[in-house]
Length: 213
Image 1 (cartoon, helix red, strand yellow):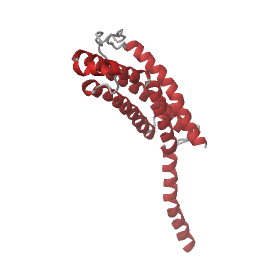
Image 2: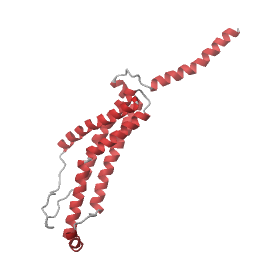
Image 3: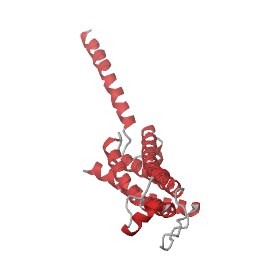
């Protein structure tokens, strides 16, 4: 009698352990999982959303900074020969302000690939350290999130920053090199995809190195 009771007790004790092992197996993808199997997992989908949102926030923040400078900003630096004139001449002051905003907007647009690469590094590191899954799942997730996020970052930065680029007045005695801009969406999409491919390499490689270390 006692032997049968002990066996039933041992079986009951093992059942929670078996269920716990099954739950862990469900959460942690196998290294042999295919790409469709990895991306179908809810944890991976949620992580991709977080990474995309992080990139979008960075792009929107940069664009918003340019917009605020366009509305409120004034050039912090003026050539000595123009400083006094700008203080007395509203046309000269506005010309310098417009040139300043245009320069900041152009820098925001043309440095967006660098910003994307740095953001990809951070997101790859974050994913490699926090994602509950196999090594393959980590770098695949980082790559997908970085790709979609970079497109969002570049598009938001370009659209918001370019909205503040205006025609600079040429009456300050210098050749006008700013003529206002119009966003060309087809080249913008091509450029965003190109930058996203490079950033994807950075994000995925970072996650891979974190898991390999």
